[in-house]
Length: 172
View (tube, rainbow, N blue to C red):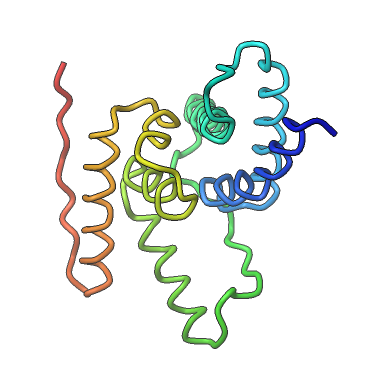
């Protein structure tokens, strides 16, 4: 096994975790990771040799997920349609911890997609601002502001205060 094969294999659990957080379905997440690895191997000659393999793979996975969402929208499906949450064993012990985990996931689902994706990449997957910016194709400052707004909205929801939804406007 080459060094690159070993590095890619070591990243599979992180890719699966991120894919599951995007799809909330284990089968869809596995398919997404497989598609990601297939695309990576097919585009191996186009990768930046000095670039970071992790950020490159997360970028491919994220772009595949976005493309799939757009394809489903074109077919008339709702973008917010989620598969039934398959409850597995709670990572924390106790019934209260399981309930709290479910509440946090539900609150996370209410965030705008842009904020949720940044929170997952930075907070869960441990990517830096620069890496997350490359994955999402936005400037690092945008990552920081989305992260700040997302954290604040989650904090407000955890405190029982309604989180206002500010309408964003596009500047062209």
